[in-house]
Image 1 (cartoon, helix red, strand yellow):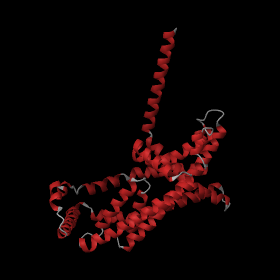
Image 2 (cartoon, one colour):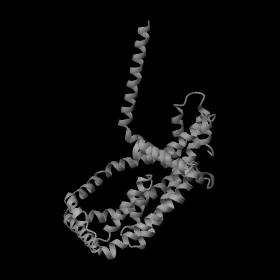
Image 3 (cartoon, helix red, strand yellow):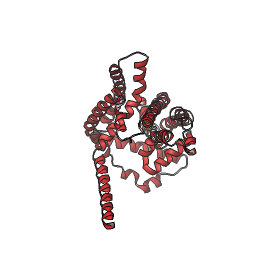
Image 4 (tube, one colour):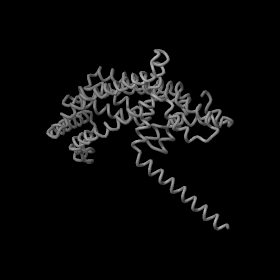
Length: 362
């Protein structure tokens, strides 16, 4: 009898393990669909305040409010794409296969100017650069290859964009659609508390994502002013790219700083390094540092405290831990996930002192 029970237990455990493996494999195969749903959910959270304003203040019909919101968001997307078209066209002309030699000559000319400048200041860096064979390792053909890959990916982007817009429309039109899907997995007896948790999470995350848009907007304005003042080509596009990269905590500002440095120098290729390139680039980077200080000491603390109601130090630790465990993706989703967990803990485990302290103010 005992052997039969043990055998049944082993078979049941194997069955559960097999079911988990199949589920993970299924989720892996449909990961693109999961990404579409996740992006659509974020868009619906961003558009939620607009729909509520149109319905409650302007007395719009729900469907009309959704259509107007979608048209507004789509218009913003088209406007952003329109910003990048001049940059893409210009870079496509400059980096075509026939211009690789010219591009290499320009970069080598800039290299010679930099070496001359440092030699004038008694700093010998040429030998160390030659020892590393840096220029010989550069493959300039990779640039047009990258552009070709980018163009070939536009087809997949179009399919993804249509899917996201389609899903977002129904998420906005029926705000309970996503909620009803989650409620299917909620055990009996927990429906009321689960609904309260979902409503609170939606409100907090909606405010958080809208706050992120304002954070990007502040950085975009500062970057644009700095780049326009120093006459950097494609200032608006560069400013938007660098501001958008700031969405990735801690890593994003480093990448955006390098990108701004590189594009600021490349926009003045052919000019004197000591008289034009170095001063302009230095002033641009000072402006970049000022923008980062404004973001770190004003924008981010205000957004975190007002939207997700968490202390900046608490958020810092959560992002660092998520980055160590799950990398860049973990850092991006750390705050929304942590906020959702806090709301659920407050609703279901509010009797514990540690939960009360963590969820104070929610």
